[in-house]
Image 1 (cartoon, rainbow, N blue to C red):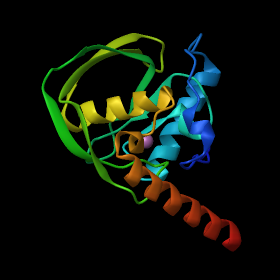
Image 2 (cartoon, protein in one colour):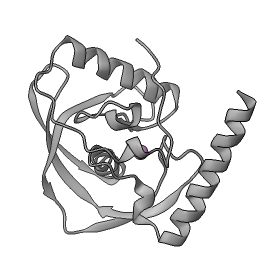
Image 3 (cartoon, rainbow, N blue to C red):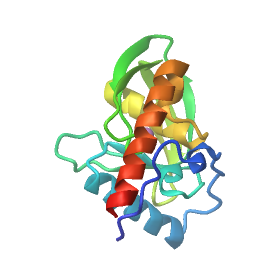
Length: 171
Ligand code: NI
């Protein structure tokens, strides 16, 4: 397993639209294992392939306290979303140190292939529902800061670029 580099906002590659996975084969299974290792290493609860510069419809999630319930969703689709909405604070491994509130559906039902290529349906609410929606946005090239006001987004962009410049100087 390998720890993959995570793209940081405002990297334009975060806005690429991911393509469906054609076959869940050894390559895809190895990628999902690397994505899970990368997510756990970074202490995240979710990671989309887009964030590791692979533009295929794959996300991994683990919202459990014990960090022992990995979920792999390949070619995920939302088959139902609740009318009920929730407002919650979100962060993102591609926008380190930034948290802000985003409105999402309170519950969703998602259909996806698992790492064995089997079709699975997941009913989710609360944090897991938020996480599924956040990661699926990544596959469409959308980062959560795009839900914020242009003013806030501008400030975040400036802050991120400054941090990246400082890191480049240190490296
Ligand atoms: Ni994210």
